[in-house]
Length: 377
Image 1 (cartoon, rainbow, N blue to C red):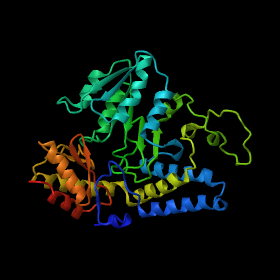
Image 2: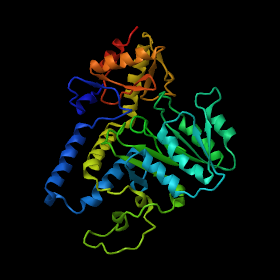
Image 3: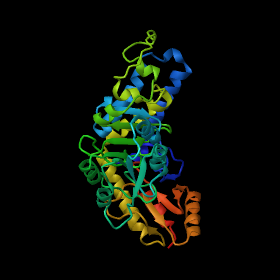
Image 4: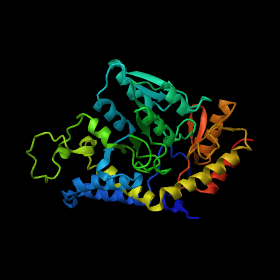
């Protein structure tokens, strides 16, 4: 079995099991950081074409990751950036409806509340209800429903939704399916050419192991065509020209996805290492990474059964990803255990009184054993 742990770190004796918060940079991405700093430290080494090539490189890497054309990728700095493009770029009418999932991550819900002042109605379904989510969506959708927005993998429970089933229901009702992939993309494979999703948005600093302040959006051509102009970034507007030809001040409305890129796309310090990180993951193969994560998660769920903690995350491999949430009848015990793990150099997250464990490609079976051994019986 391949040992990818050596491609990261050094972790100085610590175990990082908190990728759902921050993914570490692979060593080759650290080298790219050094290259970016070198260019900025001595700008005579910075070629003009880098202002085009750096964003083009990360778009190629992301396109390979999700099986999309690089021209369909919008570069952002977070999940929130992409969702705000939709909210500000699509035309909304009073009485329109958006369906969300109760208890979803705030970033997936809060931006939609901006539309309430325009008379857009937010309706909620419950993923924890005994009624299947797809059935709830079918029963909740009306002719006024414009979009369904949810996260692929829930941060608080580790529950993974069946996005093929959800997307099929959405399309049967002529509703846009907007997916927050931040806790899944990079850990689980997704092919936007086959998955019935209309909008895929993800941050880049968790499972994609990029720097903080990275993210991307992919849209179907139909959604892209429906977006109104929300940006007029000068470098995008000058596409096809060099930096010594910048006096064209006309607005180009035919830029496609690149017209919605975050400002400062030649973000050398962020996008150069992020490109290296994404290329590293795709070089291994997301299917292999997913299989490795499944083994680690299965080991953790099985080991936790002998502890006094309850596994909140669904045990069914079809319903979980790389996040395992452990709950205790005593929140004080959960907090003490989280602190004791940190003292032992095992880093997890405390979320809503529960311990969240999120291993990725760089983690080992021995590290999972080390955590399980420290869970109180």
